[in-house]
Image (cartoon, rainbow, N blue to C red; front, side, top):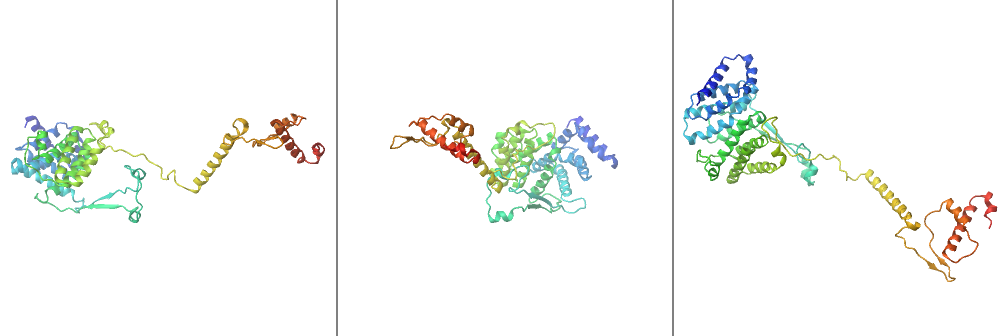
Length: 424
C-alpha cells in the first residue's frame, strides 16, 4: 500500500476519535468532500494482509452505530467490496484474522438493521400493486380486457401485503445463514442506491459478475483470473443483485451493468431460479429502450428510468349512456336532412337516386312526375306570368296546367277578399 494512501487513512482514523458529539453531523456532511479517502479505503479492504483493515472495520462500525444518516450511507458504499472479500476468504486462503474483521463488521450492520430505535425487531411490509387499478407505471386500459370472473370481482379493491421478518440476531456466519444475512444487507444497500457513488456501483457490478461466473465456462470468456471454485448463491440473493444492477444501468454504468446482468441471467439459467430469471429478463427487455441508453449519465440526479404509458380518461369515450344515445339520434337525423338537401340541390332539382319516369296517356299526353321541391311564391308568380293560352300537348303545357291548379288552390285559401280573383 502506498504511503500516501496510508497517511490519508491514518488521518481519517485519528480525527474521528477526538471529535465531540456535537460536531458529528457537520463531520458526516464533509466526508464526501474528501476525494482521496474513498479510494484509499477500497485499497485497504482489498489487501490480503493489511494492518489497517481491523481499525478501518472498527471505525466503519462506529459510523453505522452512531445513527447519523450520512455516516451510515458512507459505510454502505463499501458493502459490495466487503461482501466479495467475505465470499472470497475461504477460497483465497486469506488470513482468518483478516476475514474475521469483515465478518464482525457485516454482522454488526445486520444486527443493527433488523431492529428499530427501541430495540424491537422490524417487520418489513410491501404492498403488491393491483393491475386493475392505475399507477405511475401502467394503465389498466392498455393491458387488455381483464376477465370479470367471480374471483376477480371479489378481490377487486383488495390490496395484498407481503411481510418480511422478524429476523433473528446472528452472532456468526454459518453455511445455513450466510446468504440470508447477505441478502438482507443487499436489501439495505438497495434502499440507499440514490446516494451511492459511481465507484460503489462499479464494485456492485463486479461483485455480481464474479459471484456468478467463477468456476463456470464463462469465466474464461470474461478473462477473470481470480478464484476458480464455484460460489453457492440463492435466488433471493441474485434478485437483490439485479435490483442494484438495474440502477447502475440507468446511471452511467452501461458497460459493466450489461455484462453483470448477462452473467446473473447466465447463472440463473444454470441454477433454474425463476425469480431471478423473471426480474432479469424484464430489465433486459426494458434496456432496449432508446431513452434508457441516451439518458444515462454519471453526473446529476440519480434516477431509474421507466417507460410511462399515456394516461387515459377514467370514462371511456365509447361508453353507452342515455346522453350518447340521444346524441346518436340527433346526428343520424341531421345526416338524413343533409342527404335530402343534397339530393334536392342536385342538377334538375331532383336527387340522383330517383329515376325520371315518363308516362304516355292514350290520348297522346305525356305525364311526368311533379317536382318534389316546394315552390316559393316568387316562383309561383313567375310561373303564372308565363302561362300560354294555347293548350300544347308538350311537356311545357303539362307543367303550365299544374302551376295554374296550384295557383288556384292558393287563391282559394286566401279568403273572401280574393274570391273574385279566384274565379276563372
